Length: 460
Ligand SMILES: Nc1ncnc2c1ncn2[C@@H]1O[C@H](COP(=O)(O)OP(=O)(O)OP(=O)(O)O)[C@@H](O)[C@H]1O
Ligand SMILES: [Mg+2]
Image (tube, rainbow, N blue to C red):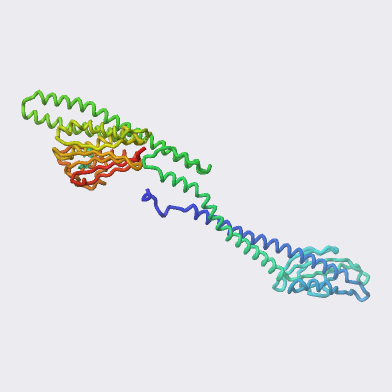
C-alpha cells in the first residue's frame, strides 16, 4: 500500500495548519501595525490641534487696533506650550484684508478662509516638511475701516509622526511576541486535532487481514463521513468476498458429487473387464478422478476455513477427543500401507472452532501418512501446559526438500512429492486455522529424520 503513495503528493496536515496559523498571524501583525499607526496618528493630531487652536486663538485675541494700525501682544506662554511639543518648527502669518502684514507670507492658506474665532485646521507641505495649521479670522476696525484679520499658525509634524510610528512598531512587536508564544499552543492544538485521525489509523492498522467487521470506534463528528465511507467500503468488500467464497464452495460441491459417481462407475468397469489395455486406462482414469475429487475436497475445506474465520465463533473444544477421532479416521489407510501409528494424547480443552480444528488435524495426519516411509512410523503427541496446547505430528518419511515457509503458500508442493498426489493446499489450510485461533504452525525436520509438524494453540 505504501508503494502506491506518491511521496511528492503526501501533504502534512500538521504542517499545513501551522503554516496557516503563521500566515494569519503575519497578516494580523501587519494589520495591527497599520491600525495602531493610524489611531496613534489621529490621537497625536487631535492633541496638536488642541494646542494649535488654543495658541492661534490666544494670538488673535492679543491683537489690538491702535491709531497707527495694529498692535500684537505675542502670548509667550502659548509659544512655550508649542515649543514643549518636541523639536517642531513653528510658522505664523497675520493678514489684514488678505494682505500679509507679518510672518511667513508664503504660508499655505486654509482651504476656506476662517470667518470667526473658530479655528480651521488643515495640513499642507511647506519648506520640505509636513505642517499642521490652524487659522482663525476676526473683523477689526482698522483706521476707521472694518477689515478681516486672519491669523494662521503652523507647526511641523516630524516628532508627532515619529511617535505614532513608534507606537505602531511597539504594538507590532508585542503582537509578534504573542504570536511566538502562541506557536507552541498552535502546535499542540494541531496535534490534538489530528489525534482522532491517528487513533482511527491505529485501530484500522491493528486489525487482522481478514477482519471485515464495521468500525465502531468513537470519532469526532467531523470524521463521521470518513468513518461512514470506510464502513461502506468494508461492507462492499465483505459482500464481494462472501460471494466469491460461496461461489467456490458451491462450485467445489457441484464438482465433487458427479466425480464420485464417475469414479464409482470407472471402478465398476475396471472390475468387470479383463482386457489388460482397458484395465490400464481405467486405472489411470480412477487415479485422475481421485486426484480431482481430492483437489475439490481441499478447495472446499479451504473455502470452509476462510468462511468460518470470517464468522469466527469460539466454543469449548475437546482437542484430545478430536485427535482420537482423527487417528481412527486414518487407521484403515495406515493399515493398508503398514504404517505404525502411535500416540500420546493428554486431556486438552481449548476455545475454538471444532470444524476448522478437525480439518487442520486431518491435513496434518494425511501428510504424515502420505509422506511416511512404507512400513514406517507416524506419531501424534498432544500436550497441554501453561495455557498452550501443543499438537505434534511426526513421521519417519522422506523429510522436507523445500523451505517450510514456501510450502505453506497456496497450491505449493515440494520437490519431494514424487508420484504422491496432492493439490498443495493442506498446509495453507492448517496455517489459516492456526491464525484464526491466534496460534501458530511450524513445519520442521524431525529429530530422527522425517518431518515434524507442530500446531500451537492457546488452551482454555
Ligand atoms: N510430512 C511431510 N513430509 C514431507 N513433506 C511434507 C510433509 N508435509 C508436507 N510436506 C511437503 O509440503 C508440501 C505442501 O504440503 P500440503 O499439505 O500443503 O500439500 P500436499 O500434501 O502436496 O497437497 P494436499 O493439498 O492434498 O494436502 C507437500 O507437497 C510436501 O512437499
Ligand atoms: Mg497435504
